Length: 323
Image 1 (cartoon, rainbow, N blue to C red):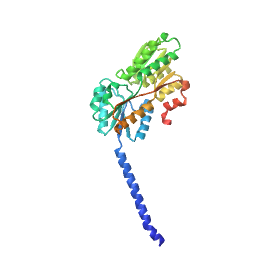
Image 2 (cartoon, rainbow, N blue to C red):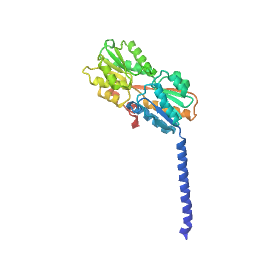
Image 3 (cartoon, rainbow, N blue to C red):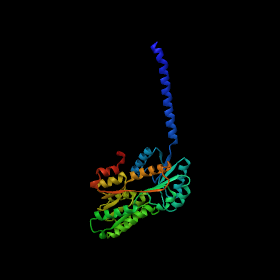
Image 4 (cartoon, helix red, strand yellow):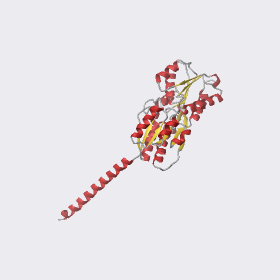
């Protein structure tokens, strides 16, 4: 008899549990469907250069409860090509887009067309003149990076700087960020008594930059103003009989490898993890209407030598996946 009286109660408990679980699943499903979507459009999205940046983005997306999509891209040559990718992201329901501009020329007019249709955040670009058309900018101080590279070249030069031949590999002149790095480097170098012997502009074509390097005088100091340039500089230096000093900026494992091997003497590293984290966090904050005004942030950079490569604070910057 006792078991018979317990049976209806057990059935009721089971039904209540099923209803509770079903309700929770529906609530979770509804919440997922309502999550805001952020799309990320960067040059060569699979490039090793973006590992730390993307890790920072993923952590921020988890913290801010947004859906993050890294749009697969290759080398983008024109703004119209980049605009078409942004348009597709908007058509796919994006609430916000994080963009690394492939060119600063004409960018203001493109952003003005798009800003009424989605929320735009810029990264890796000090284009503060377009702040009225974006919700935020997160970028390193590119001029300061150029200045730091010049100071490191003077530090590691094996003879007086004014007697050194100095070659420079730089990125596209269409980017204001690259112009700022070049200006910072040139001004600081000249103040230290040095002068560039030759400057090569690389456009993402590895074969092209190798041919350009082979056609120029082998310098005493080889400087790279971006990660692709540093990888090319490291490969070039390792194939030469003449010893040379290699200084530059980079974040990829290949760049770190050249530093560890002693082929690169000094690596200036922007804190890309923080740039990724802040860009998603700031854009999500704007989308959720926790703020209404554009916000500009500047991320730090640090200088790493072979003997400081394995310092704990540098490992945290270089290998954030292990955090």
